[in-house]
Image 1 (cartoon, rainbow, N blue to C red):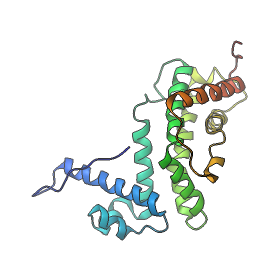
Image 2: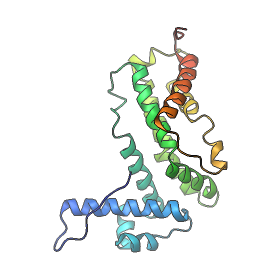
Image 3: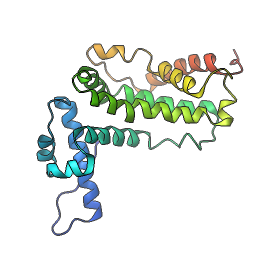
Length: 219
């Protein structure tokens, strides 16, 4: 998910140049956070490498926490941009969950995502705003997106009546994540290829659907 940017142009910046510079700022900040850790990165360091004024960061993002928020939000949005909006996707349930599940598994097994999760876990105690921001724009937003999806009348009717949409969303994420979080304790593994992820996804979605659907799956 690299972000490319243009060089400086003479005269007043065009809108495209402004957008490219903003993307470069987020890209530079993201790289520094992953390389050095949230606590060791200063706004001065980011501003120097991104060729912007520190005041610009304060005006646009309110400080380091706001900038980190924007970095995570942008990268998450870019990753899921290829998927139709869950609120309006009228495909059959297995097709929707299959596409979402594959994107989600690819995302959480990326080396950069693993490094990001490790950084948040390691620094959450000393920088509580880091954990709060990460949850709000990362896992929390994904859970909220799924909860709205499972609240759709045409989708909700397919699941057991005693389960809330939020419970279903959380269970789906837990099934997909499996033991991924415990693996953060160990050196990073090679990211699974598409075939390996598809096999994992089929198994985990089967467990999820058998536990939550109103009508049992056919044997």
